[in-house]
Length: 150
Image 1 (cartoon, one colour):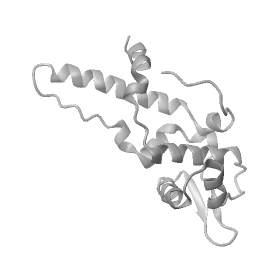
Image 2: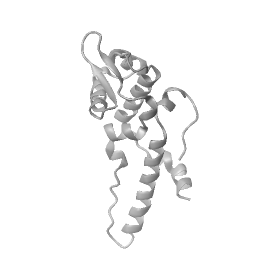
Image 3: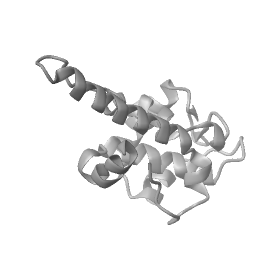
Image 4: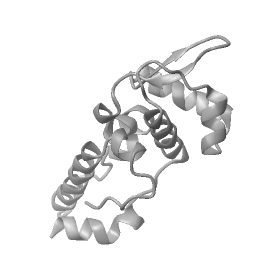
């Protein structure tokens, strides 16, 4: 029953930040061109995804600190995935750039507080499981593919 409720209310529940969206798009690009050694320039990533290079570099720095991408400086520098695309899940991305998405802020006060908090904890857990089930390989090789449902 809970999974059905989450599916019905998904659009209403989810407020994906622009930062998280851009992180996913940049990582999907890096995954599409991943061979373990070829760097992708910041300008190329920004152009392919129609994202501001200034904002994207901030996001890529968060992803680098989280161990999801590697970077090289200099004229021939750029970015590449630090792991295989199948080993990076959307949960890793959320944890790196927008961890508040997975935090439950519902209090346990009042007569119904405990049961309401329990319901939101279940929803949070279902979201975490869904994020764990989708990896960059899926995003990179399934452009315009089916929507994911939890």
